[in-house]
Length: 184
Image 1: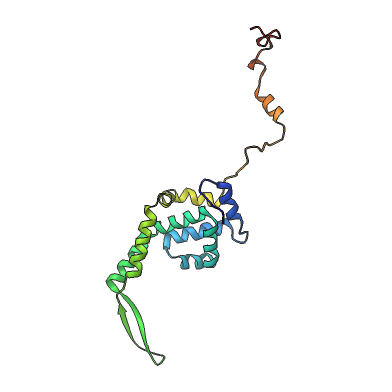
Image 2: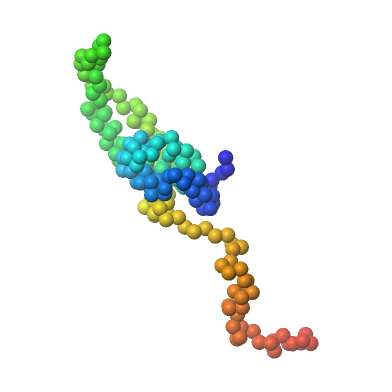
Protein backbone atom coordinates (compact mmCIF):
# COMPACT_ATOMS: atom_id res chain seq x y z
CA UNK A 1 0.00 0.00 0.00
CA UNK A 2 1.33 3.43 -0.83
CA UNK A 3 2.07 6.10 1.73
CA UNK A 4 -0.78 8.62 1.71
CA UNK A 5 0.59 11.75 3.30
CA UNK A 6 -1.45 14.90 3.96
CA UNK A 7 0.94 16.70 1.60
CA UNK A 8 -0.17 14.79 -1.49
CA UNK A 9 -3.65 16.14 -2.31
CA UNK A 10 -3.87 14.37 -5.65
CA UNK A 11 -3.20 11.04 -3.94
CA UNK A 12 -5.76 11.72 -1.22
CA UNK A 13 -8.43 12.74 -3.70
CA UNK A 14 -7.65 9.75 -5.91
CA UNK A 15 -8.11 7.44 -2.93
CA UNK A 16 -11.48 8.99 -2.13
CA UNK A 17 -12.53 8.64 -5.76
CA UNK A 18 -11.62 4.92 -5.65
CA UNK A 19 -15.08 4.14 -4.24
CA UNK A 20 -17.54 5.60 -6.75
CA UNK A 21 -20.41 3.86 -4.95
CA UNK A 22 -19.81 6.02 -1.85
CA UNK A 23 -20.42 9.71 -2.60
CA UNK A 24 -18.50 12.45 -0.84
CA UNK A 25 -21.77 13.71 0.67
CA UNK A 26 -22.20 10.33 2.39
CA UNK A 27 -18.64 10.41 3.73
CA UNK A 28 -19.21 13.94 5.01
CA UNK A 29 -22.54 12.95 6.62
CA UNK A 30 -20.83 10.02 8.34
CA UNK A 31 -17.99 12.17 9.70
CA UNK A 32 -20.46 14.85 10.83
CA UNK A 33 -22.63 12.26 12.62
CA UNK A 34 -19.55 10.65 14.15
CA UNK A 35 -18.47 14.03 15.53
CA UNK A 36 -21.84 14.35 17.27
CA UNK A 37 -22.26 10.82 18.62
CA UNK A 38 -18.76 9.38 18.87
CA UNK A 39 -20.05 5.93 17.86
CA UNK A 40 -18.91 4.44 14.54
CA UNK A 41 -21.65 1.78 14.47
CA UNK A 42 -24.43 4.33 15.09
CA UNK A 43 -22.99 6.86 12.61
CA UNK A 44 -22.62 4.18 9.92
CA UNK A 45 -26.22 3.04 10.48
CA UNK A 46 -27.42 6.65 10.32
CA UNK A 47 -25.92 7.18 6.84
CA UNK A 48 -26.77 3.65 5.65
CA UNK A 49 -23.23 2.40 4.98
CA UNK A 50 -21.59 -0.70 6.41
CA UNK A 51 -18.86 -0.22 8.99
CA UNK A 52 -16.56 -2.49 6.98
CA UNK A 53 -16.83 -0.25 3.93
CA UNK A 54 -16.12 2.84 6.03
CA UNK A 55 -13.10 1.18 7.63
CA UNK A 56 -11.78 0.32 4.13
CA UNK A 57 -12.17 3.99 3.16
CA UNK A 58 -10.36 4.96 6.37
CA UNK A 59 -7.40 2.76 5.42
CA UNK A 60 -7.38 4.07 1.84
CA UNK A 61 -7.54 7.81 2.49
CA UNK A 62 -5.34 9.86 4.82
CA UNK A 63 -7.73 12.83 4.65
CA UNK A 64 -10.74 10.69 5.60
CA UNK A 65 -8.72 9.04 8.39
CA UNK A 66 -7.75 12.44 9.84
CA UNK A 67 -11.37 13.66 9.65
CA UNK A 68 -12.53 10.45 11.34
CA UNK A 69 -10.03 10.90 14.20
CA UNK A 70 -10.94 14.58 14.53
CA UNK A 71 -14.63 13.65 14.71
CA UNK A 72 -13.91 11.23 17.56
CA UNK A 73 -11.99 13.93 19.41
CA UNK A 74 -14.88 16.37 18.91
CA UNK A 75 -17.32 13.75 20.26
CA UNK A 76 -15.32 13.38 23.47
CA UNK A 77 -17.86 15.29 25.62
CA UNK A 78 -20.60 12.82 24.65
CA UNK A 79 -18.35 9.88 25.52
CA UNK A 80 -17.53 11.49 28.86
CA UNK A 81 -21.26 11.89 29.52
CA UNK A 82 -21.89 8.19 28.83
CA UNK A 83 -18.94 7.30 31.05
CA UNK A 84 -20.24 9.43 33.90
CA UNK A 85 -23.74 7.96 33.54
CA UNK A 86 -22.45 4.38 33.56
CA UNK A 87 -20.07 5.07 36.43
CA UNK A 88 -22.79 6.66 38.59
CA UNK A 89 -25.89 4.70 37.54
CA UNK A 90 -24.41 1.47 36.15
CA UNK A 91 -25.90 -0.58 33.34
CA UNK A 92 -29.02 -2.66 33.76
CA UNK A 93 -28.83 -6.13 32.28
CA UNK A 94 -31.26 -9.02 32.28
CA UNK A 95 -30.58 -12.30 34.06
CA UNK A 96 -31.92 -15.38 32.27
CA UNK A 97 -32.57 -18.83 33.72
CA UNK A 98 -33.63 -21.66 31.40
CA UNK A 99 -34.36 -19.16 28.65
CA UNK A 100 -36.61 -16.96 30.77
CA UNK A 101 -35.80 -13.57 32.17
CA UNK A 102 -35.91 -13.95 35.93
CA UNK A 103 -34.31 -10.75 37.15
CA UNK A 104 -32.34 -7.65 36.28
CA UNK A 105 -29.14 -6.44 37.80
CA UNK A 106 -27.13 -3.26 37.65
CA UNK A 107 -23.52 -3.63 36.67
CA UNK A 108 -20.97 -0.91 37.40
CA UNK A 109 -18.06 -1.36 35.02
CA UNK A 110 -16.59 1.53 33.09
CA UNK A 111 -13.18 0.06 32.26
CA UNK A 112 -13.84 -0.09 28.53
CA UNK A 113 -14.97 3.52 28.39
CA UNK A 114 -11.97 4.59 30.46
CA UNK A 115 -9.72 2.83 27.96
CA UNK A 116 -11.59 4.54 25.13
CA UNK A 117 -11.12 7.96 26.76
CA UNK A 118 -7.41 7.21 27.13
CA UNK A 119 -7.26 6.47 23.42
CA UNK A 120 -9.06 9.72 22.63
CA UNK A 121 -6.58 11.59 24.84
CA UNK A 122 -3.69 10.11 22.85
CA UNK A 123 -5.44 10.96 19.57
CA UNK A 124 -6.02 14.53 20.73
CA UNK A 125 -2.36 14.84 21.64
CA UNK A 126 -1.19 14.04 18.11
CA UNK A 127 -0.53 17.13 16.05
CA UNK A 128 -2.39 16.06 12.90
CA UNK A 129 -5.57 15.07 14.72
CA UNK A 130 -5.52 18.20 16.87
CA UNK A 131 -5.11 20.33 13.75
CA UNK A 132 -7.88 18.41 11.98
CA UNK A 133 -10.19 18.91 14.96
CA UNK A 134 -9.54 22.66 14.93
CA UNK A 135 -10.09 22.83 11.16
CA UNK A 136 -12.97 20.34 11.17
CA UNK A 137 -15.57 22.54 9.44
CA UNK A 138 -13.16 23.71 6.73
CA UNK A 139 -11.93 20.18 6.08
CA UNK A 140 -15.47 18.85 5.99
CA UNK A 141 -16.22 21.47 3.33
CA UNK A 142 -13.12 20.39 1.41
CA UNK A 143 -14.34 16.79 1.57
CA UNK A 144 -17.64 17.86 -0.02
CA UNK A 145 -16.02 20.22 -2.56
CA UNK A 146 -12.49 19.00 -3.28
CA UNK A 147 -9.95 21.41 -4.73
CA UNK A 148 -8.99 21.01 -8.36
CA UNK A 149 -5.46 19.63 -8.61
CA UNK A 150 -3.54 20.39 -11.81
CA UNK A 151 -0.10 19.38 -12.93
CA UNK A 152 2.41 22.22 -13.25
CA UNK A 153 3.22 21.29 -16.81
CA UNK A 154 -0.42 21.54 -17.92
CA UNK A 155 -1.35 24.66 -19.81
CA UNK A 156 -4.84 25.56 -20.89
CA UNK A 157 -4.41 26.03 -24.62
CA UNK A 158 -1.07 24.32 -25.21
CA UNK A 159 0.56 27.41 -26.74
CA UNK A 160 3.32 28.61 -24.40
CA UNK A 161 4.66 31.18 -26.90
CA UNK A 162 1.30 32.89 -27.16
CA UNK A 163 0.98 32.84 -23.38
CA UNK A 164 4.33 34.56 -22.87
CA UNK A 165 3.80 36.95 -25.79
CA UNK A 166 0.65 38.26 -24.13
CA UNK A 167 2.64 39.05 -21.00
CA UNK A 168 5.29 41.00 -22.90
CA UNK A 169 4.33 44.45 -24.06
CA UNK A 170 6.14 46.72 -26.46
CA UNK A 171 7.61 48.72 -23.60
CA UNK A 172 9.15 45.72 -21.86
CA UNK A 173 12.35 45.89 -23.89
CA UNK A 174 13.73 48.04 -26.62
CA UNK A 175 15.53 46.70 -29.69
CA UNK A 176 18.16 49.45 -29.25
CA UNK A 177 19.16 47.85 -25.96
CA UNK A 178 20.52 44.88 -27.88
CA UNK A 179 23.05 46.22 -30.35
CA UNK A 180 24.33 43.76 -32.93
CA UNK A 181 27.90 44.79 -32.50
CA UNK A 182 27.89 43.81 -28.82
CA UNK A 183 28.33 47.37 -27.52
CA UNK A 184 25.92 48.91 -25.06
